[in-house]
Length: 113
Image (cartoon, rainbow, N blue to C red; front, side, top):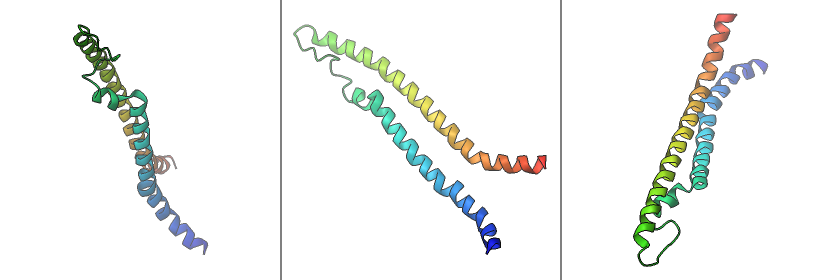
């Protein structure tokens, strides 16, 4: 009975580490990305790009308000995209390190022992 469990343990580990856990990681990072985009309001900024920033509709100020709003929104959108790219880079690093970790441990055990 114990020998069967010892044979089944590596298979269970590989199924978990290379199939189940990555699915959970991708789902988690998807929720993190969705929350981040909501936090920085990037979809709303893109949808309302051509509208004035403070809903200024007085005659003579509409053009200026639209131009100023587009300028400010452009800077905010660029900053949001930069932060989002950094977040994606961090997530990609975590995923790569997650896949490399068991290989690194096995190689370390082979050369140290």
